[in-house]
Image 1 (cartoon, rainbow, N blue to C red):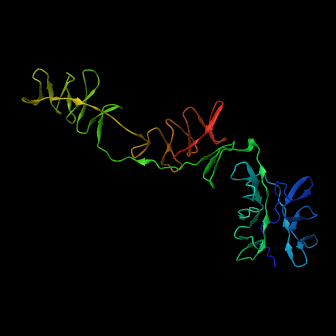
Image 2 (image 1 turned 180 degrees about the vertical axis):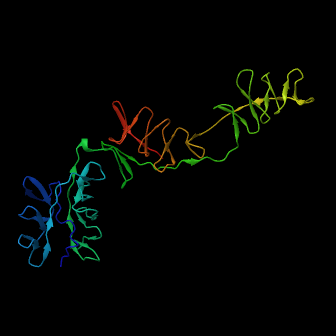
Length: 337
């Protein structure tokens, strides 16, 4: 006995031509594997007839509730090749020739013969040509119909999550890149920066040289002498004539002054995002939707407002084409990693 609960979406009214076409005052309904009733409002399961008097679907052995048709929908299910589409509430399944077809039910199981499919929660029994379920028992296999080829103007760049590929609007495919978190800055020895490019070691003081560059006095909070060569300890004064450092509170106390040493360049292989996070050199820090920092693998990049992507310098983020555009040029956008 066929159970009505197993027969999922036997009659769906969709915006495709693939089976019986039921006219309704100028509107078109497509009832897949179904019988269109003459009231133009309902349809019945394949193998049954419409009983308009009792509002039922009947045959010699079964009496089932009929199904009310629904208007066509414009939404579509985009197949993994990004060039084919199936109607809403159907499932993309590959055909024997490698093209894509549509199983007339949502979240369907695509059978290994690439010709049939089964409702969600059932399994394909190809040997007996059945969809089997421990709960509802067997039901017939479903045949797929050909997917519609999308026009070039309808295609957009997208991510093929099934095959881990990025697909451009013209069908070009590249492997997806895996995102990586921003790295935490490792604790390192503190330095005394003189400017953005040079620094002195911790516990020293930056002092100007005669050439106007920077040098390091090997004392903390030191006094830089006016000769731009020497320096003295904190709270002393430079005595250029005696080449000493004097205590202004007791001029009898003096210590030798110190010669300055060269600075060293501030070397950084990372792009600093904040005090705790950084990105590799040649990349750009961009905020993620989580609020954390991500890394765009481009220097001086433009961070997109969706907090997922980024574009090269000079380009802008264009959500409509899911890419980066400027004037007459467009290209793939990058993921913030």
